[in-house]
Length: 298
View (cartoon, one colour):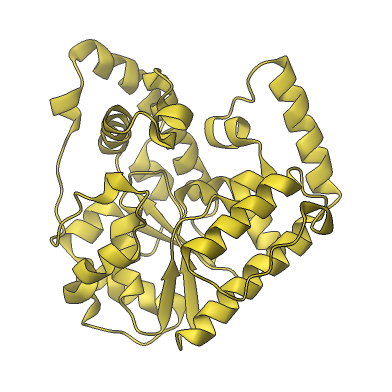
């Protein structure tokens, strides 16, 4: 499950994972850790000369199958295994996992083992930033299916900014905001373009946040058909219990998620007129209706 952060991915994850045939896992930064290229993929800007050179080297390594950041990827995978309490996970030195293929193999072993233990036929990973690494996922998991969530830019940017202010020591501030509103808007625009580029592919499904708010039952029905599991009418009523299960103790920004599906506009509450002008100069580049008007579920 992918999309720009703060678009409603946790809410959607809670609904989907309420299905008894689907096991959902906490977020993992495995791909960004192993592949790198964060600035380039998420913000379209690899930075200064040193960062551009590093990104070029990482692209070359990825092209020949080598893991651009094997040590980082191995550590991320170990943290993920700890989060889901996978007792069978074996920690190997990063030198034994120099290829992207070998690291993916270990990740899939963990996911499949956990799915079997929980009697689930399908597994779900919700990590919004994976939208920038879908090319790598499709290369190593050919039958992967992607669920995208699309939310208007004003709401997403306001929520990102709010999280960055409330939790300054987390990635919301250190990675996304960095004191620059433009970064938040640019990240949303880039995520939307990623979704739009593959929106009509059979293994991708687009969920619009407004549809989820107005008619969650219909969205859930369409999603389960896309995933390939039987319809389950109890998922909407049970999703509030699932919210707690998809959070970790380190995700304080999710503590305000309640038991009701609702919409709130923070944009007018947070930004002054000058800030809105700055943001809209970037957000206006994306016209959601034109980008997604041909989708069958739109």
